[in-house]
Length: 415
Image (cartoon, rainbow, N blue to C red; front, side):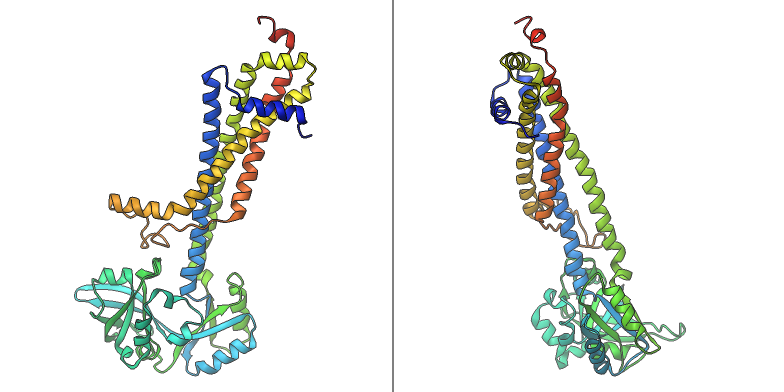
């Protein structure tokens, strides 16, 4: 039952009144501060984990395909296959040809492994957002006639090779069918840099579709089709059903085989960190118990007078429940504001600290992205606020019950 008007009135007056001892005021402020920090940190961390999930979905899985369909001996008439796949399956929105090669890139004495992809720039834009991280004039140049001898590298890969735009790179393509065969070698010119801020910057290289096909074991053919599915999370099932309906020799893959573990790791980290910080919020909320117990001791005389004047035990309990609710609501509100500020400014704050100390907290060679993303979700703020308020209300029950058991005669004996 909700506290009545009398309990709300007295409880609010007590919440704003000065304590008889500074210790009680200090403990009350400490409870509010602990709740504020707990809620604020929880909201900030949840926003950061949401940001990691968004960047994985929109950047890494935006550059890489949702899925791909291959043929064991390559695909020569990819235009017909693309038309058949897209027209026959409403769950496949777009498809684009590509050639996939595992190569070694050499600049002087420096050698780095890379995944080399041959793409058709116009077709690739339908299934990927890679063009968002490359200068438009570089893509136009790659698509033009001069692009046959050009290559685009990820920023981390170019940095490892210590090569700049216009520099020469030697591509070595080993044979996958004959280990004794000499690798194909082709000199290329670095035309541009991919700056996605993700782990792909350390492994991705792009060339024209025909140039990659000439380096493959099936010249004139493509490795397969990149697929953009109607639903990211339904992509495995969509690719599986599509491949089953095709002739022998076709096989498929999807993003869960390449980055599924990373996505699940982000989800697990979000759940575990969220649980840990919820426990911190719970501890902060139950500091309200110690605060209200001290208030009960401090207000024993007042409680006795209220009961002498006719206040019932339920009304006395209501008084201290209201007071605890005010403490919980204040801490939750301030924590929500702190979490909102932390979520909004965590990225520039980390970048500022990195600039001061000269150390990168996140490196895309180790982490999925090289910066700290953040995404504020209203559902997280509502859930955390409701849980914090509920814990605060539960924490008021025991002190309020203690207050209702105060005997007026005992409390007023020495007054």
